[in-house]
Length: 178
Figure 1 (spheres, one colour):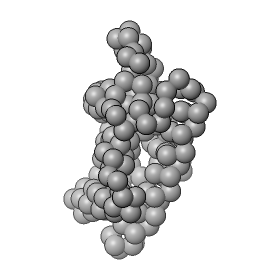
Figure 2 (tube, helix red, strand yellow):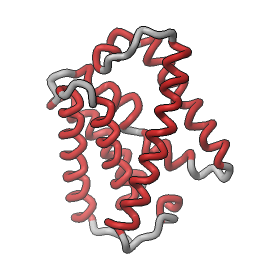
Figure 3 (spheres, helix red, strand yellow):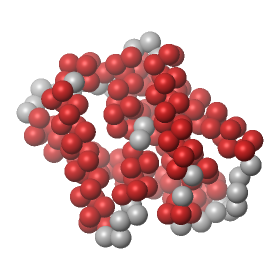
Figure 4 (tube, one colour):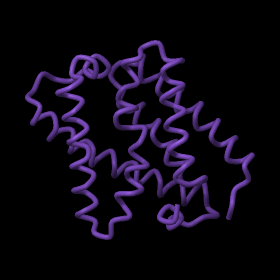
């Protein structure tokens, strides 16, 4: 079922406002920054479900741009920009691969690459937004990959919950068609 443009714009505005609110919270609330950034990525998944991939991409771009203007701690939005914001989009494409093991390998490899670039290239800037222990990069990547798999599983459950309890009129296969 094709959604009206008014619905898409209104949903985009609501999702953008909630994303910015959680990003703002993530920049001020110590200890649960990553949790708030993870929740903010759920709204990108909702946009993809309701409006298609382009809606999710536009939400991510708008949140990054608006985040730079509204959030005082610019370094605090880096986890959203470098990982959480686009993860639902990447997840959509990775899960189109027919073999589940290959899906996981692709997700983990991409995450390791991004984390490596962040830790080696932007360590001072990235570490100021999120407090990381002073371990070797390999240990941080291994621990991060474990947390990624947990985050990805929780995001999958939240998307399934959205389909069962909130959307109800659509099918989960709609995601594969976007």
